[in-house]
Length: 258
Image (cartoon, rainbow, N blue to C red; front, top):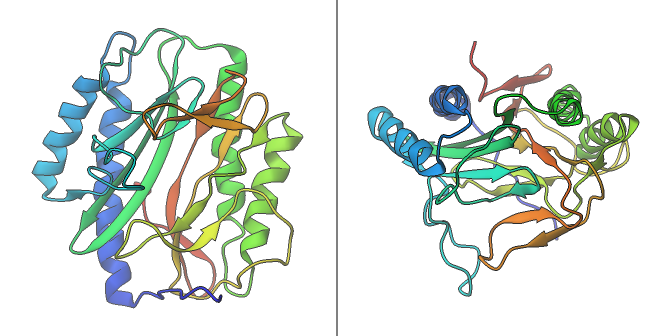
């Protein structure tokens, strides 16, 4: 079945731009607070305070994926070391050498934005630093492929090529996605693939590109909480994400600070 893609008008993109800038400011503040000894609960309080200050709605809190799994309990995801995505902040203490993924979405004037970043706490290993750097680079390699008439497969190909060239694997069962009036819309945006395959990009399309790179195997497992996805081999994982819009001649990142 053909996916229905919601192309955004100029006025809708302007609202998403505002939403993205607010999210970027909140993420910047959270990243600044990441240090050994801080708790996930403290970070949650900071995020909740900023959500109230900016008068936005958290996209993730109480999100439902299945009637058999509890609604997501937090305003952002905190994933540490071998946790790939969807970790809970609660009852976590960040330690020296941890790598910390923060993933968050907000809804502003009816439109969502979605972004993620991974940072180190204190002094991290050379391998962890390389994983973070390559994951971020992979995100921008994918973003560079965003332009009218290009295809979704070009994005995934660029991400995968850079990741594997540097000795890392790309998670296969979790992908990027459209963003707009819903936090998850069509199309899916895989972080692997082949050039000239998949949906053709058109101006007004808005979606999140979010590479998740693993130090070891790309295989994953889910904790008993029904949410936290981690590496099966216990090795490190990093995650970066931006919401972008396809413009008439390329792209614009909506979740980046100027």
